[in-house]
Length: 451
Image: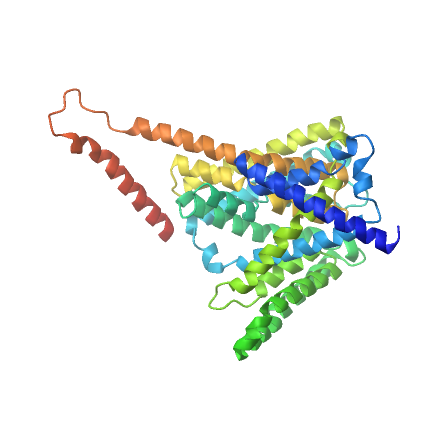
């Protein structure tokens, strides 16, 4: 293919991907699922799992090998911008909003599945060795498995909380804050797993982490203060904030990629380091960056789907999938529920928190693609873990509906029964216990916010 032919095919591919992702995303919403589920499904459908099995080898025709590098570059830019948005929206005050309850949930819902994930890789070496690339040291692989089974997708969780009317409630606040805390720790552990692999395989992991520490210090102690002073010098300069944000995100991504980690870390660090007026993200920066990431993210799902092939799973892969699903689901639901109860939430709210923190979605896919690019995992284990991410994310909506249905039933049975022969005009007395319960619930929520 010459350059013009490649450009023509790439333009057509982008149009196909954007339209298919938009349609399936809308269909997912109508089915009560987050739009990202439909977008991921579109990426998988266009890959070898579905389209590639139809006569005519349509996947190879639509996405020839010469075009894939260009689509991959665009998808990586989308992920860098997306991670910038995630970092830019992070607010230390918001992370403290859930108080002790969120910290307890984050601690248990991260450490338990992380420990089980790393332990499972060591307890069943036969299953994992069959899908583990040669030359990967145990430290990187075990740390990656710890992250892969303990990640919670904050962006998807936040969307579910809004769509399900849980914003501002005790379970919604606790789950969202806990997810933010867990994501911070997960990226730190993943950075440790990637140190000394990929582009920096010639360097030791200790040296890679030391260089990363120097870059982080430079970013926050030098770059951020300079940007803050520059943006405060004149109101006219504020028009250049978007250009600064994009340049900072891409430049930081280039540095972390050169350090042997991944470009996504640079995007996240840039978002955290970007100055905020009065501690609040600037809408003139946030909105266009969000829209740009949302427009290009379907390319990431398709490049993910092209590395994903359910038909390639053998018997060992199916057994591994069942094992990973059990560990990932129980390792999140049980500790999440137990920690929420320990923090003082009732059974209904604790169950909602557990269902929410089991959401993995887009964050998990980014983690998996980073590990696949670094050579920590192979395509078969990648397929297994993508399926785990899809199943656990798909479970969230039905679990929330089930918990709410049982909560309504329980509240109905908790109502004080009417007396056999109530006196005439005594209706207000029979309604009093229900009103008292509502006031108690409100007081409990206020107490939780102060915790």
